[in-house]
Image (cartoon, rainbow, N blue to C red):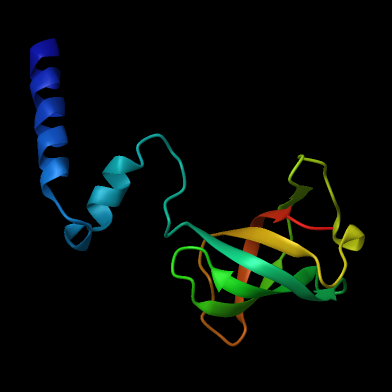
Length: 129
């Protein structure tokens, strides 16, 4: 039985090495994600500057770029259970933030394609004070 698993594993490695990024489909992404890490589709990154803080709606407006494409974007990030930290790992709350801070943001789940976009914050890392 162990030999069968070894052969199947080797075959999967060979097949994975033969594909190109254009040939990757959702099933390939799911197989590569067997260790339960979030895929690019599940977690989306942005880098930019906080341009508005809406404490009543528990959200911030980040203006900058998508990390994977470099496209300019504005996105409302609903904090909810999301984590806000600085580069040293110190925790922040929404009330600690101010307009003009530079940050990296990671969104989990779907991003609403509106103007500005909207998504649920997974983590915000403040990169400048």
